[in-house]
Length: 175
Image (tube, rainbow, N blue to C red; front, side, top):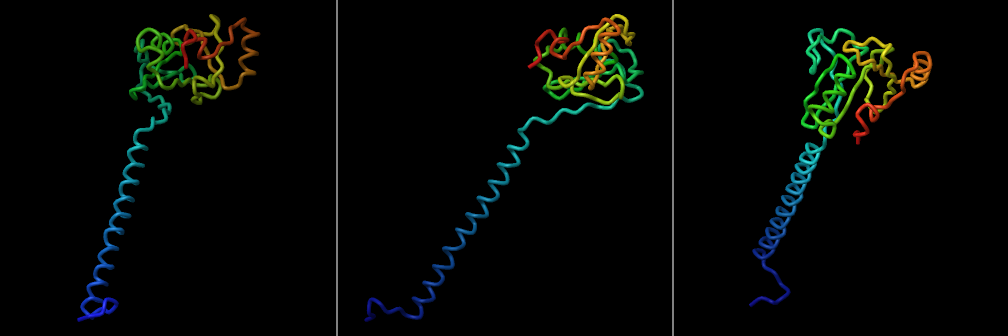
């Protein structure tokens, strides 16, 4: 008969096995938890809204509204819909009219306009607009966009033009 505190060699081996096997589930648990966390991070990252960026005007691009060729980038505009479609326009007025009449301002995620002076893309919300019948634009909308608000003020004064924001052009419907 064995004393209660004594172990046999077999008992010591079986005790070590028991200890060893108890580490395996903990290691698997940590590995599984790591896989789950990485998977959750990937899923959450995929659910974020993609940042809309303007597309460059290609040589054969035409206005989505009037189907005229987009020949002069300084008048160009485009928007991205919430479902990811980008529509290009030859005149800011074409973009504004199409947004209001066909797509609905609330269904658009981003607006872009070309700076008249530099021909660089600007976010529509960051641009300053000047509108005058004296400006000859492709569809006679008479709207020019600028990053430099000082230029807009000078043009407005010289051409008796209105200084506007994108929100003004869209009838106060921009978020």
